[in-house]
Length: 76
Image (cartoon, one colour):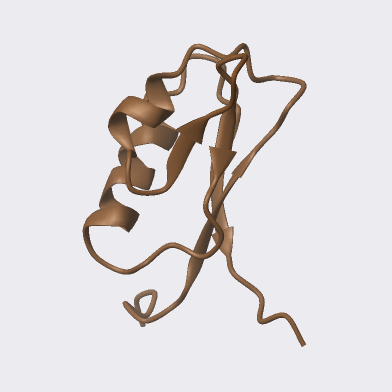
């Protein structure tokens, strides 16, 4: 069985590994903005569709491998 399309994902960043290149904000503008120093500020849970596709592209392109996707856990 493949991963369900309805599984909510969250984009995460390792602040130590991140060098503030900003490529993630260019590739995933629906879920990543940059702070005043050029480091990523991530949206919470990703919306299915374009936001998730953009986030996957940003993870693959990160030159420092500082981004990853994980299952979003409901905040209860």
